[in-house]
Every structure is written in structure tokens, then in C-alpha cells.
Amino acid sequence: MDIHNDIKVSRAISPAAAVTDNTAFVSEILDTANFAANELLIATGSLADAGATFTVLLEESAADDMSGANSVADADLIGTEAAASFDQDDDDSTFKLGYRGNKRYIRATITPAGNAGNAFIAAMWVQMNGRTAPQA
Image (cartoon, rainbow, N blue to C red):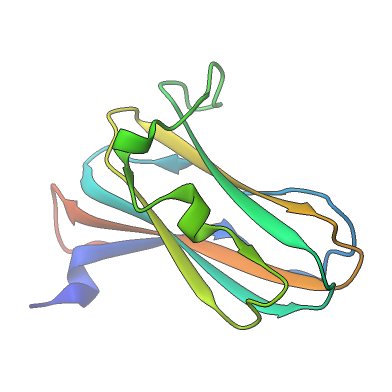
């Protein structure tokens, strides 16, 4: 199997300076056209604040600007938003959440609560089973 040419990887949430408040991390919008498999991969660095939680939400829309966006129904998720969410004990960890719905565009939001310390978070989109190969 040749995974290198079968997947497309895109930026979702760029690595950045630590967030020290409850500002949400909002991903780039992913165009799911021409792909049968779409996955969000989240990586955490140091999560310094005791008591901080980070809740993941996946939204879908038919519009490329996410107008009319809805939360993705549980039946259209591979995994759960709860399992992709994390807290201050999850330093240097990874989480994943898949999408199998029929809307063309998706976006993820990671919302901190109780965060006053440093939180380092990044994420990427991975797409597979494209209609054409190799992927860029």
C-alpha cells in the first residue's frame, strides 16, 4: 500500500504562540469534494492550566463560507467529539475525529474553558480515497 500518494494533508489549525485565555481555535475550512475519507488530527503541546478543558466541535455546510453551518450529527462522525476533546492532563497527545457526512465543507472549533495558562494546539486535515491519484 502506498499511503504517501493516497492521502492529502492540509493545514487545519497552525501551530502558534500559546493561548492564555478562552479564545476558540477555529480551523481552516476543508473542501471534502472528491474524497471519501476526511479526518481531523489534533496535536497538543504543553497545556499548563490545571482545570482547563478543550471541547471539539465539527460543523458542516454546503457553502464554502460556512454560511448556514450546522453541527455534524453523531451518525456522520467517525469517533465522537467527546473522544476528540481533551483537558490539561493531555499534554503532548494526539486526537482524531472523522467525517462521513454529505456536506461539501467542514470546519472544526476547539473551545477552551477555564484556561489561563499556556495552551499549545495544532491540527491538520487528512483526506484519503480521492477520485484521482497521486495526491499533492
